Length: 141
View 1 (spheres, helix red, strand yellow):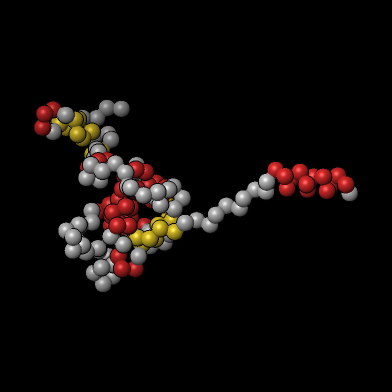
View 2 (tube, rainbow, N blue to C red):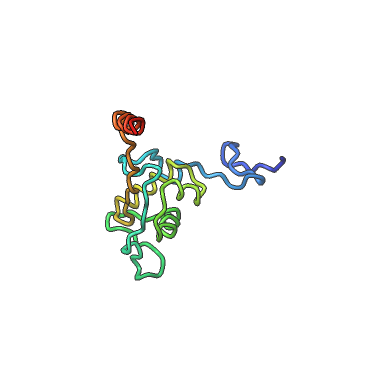
């Protein structure tokens, strides 16, 4: 696999024709590496809030009064989440690292542009005692 390399300042390779442009994950998150909440696990369902169409439904999100402005990745997440998607599905669709997606989702959550839905809980298995009683009951038949 050969491809020419393009070099930025200081001679560090930043672009490879074969691989395409490389953007480090911390560049997308402003250097942040995690979101300080446990609500964004792998299977949490993310849904864009109707208020996310802040421009009257033409597709863009307005900058907040606190000076925060969404990045293109935030916009892509909002577009994807018009229907509920899990955190891992969003990461897969955007081909971004899971940690990066969690940070971006945290931004959107902090600005009330998305909501998090918990998936239905998995039924608990009966205890070992209950299983033994059932087996004993079957044997007694």
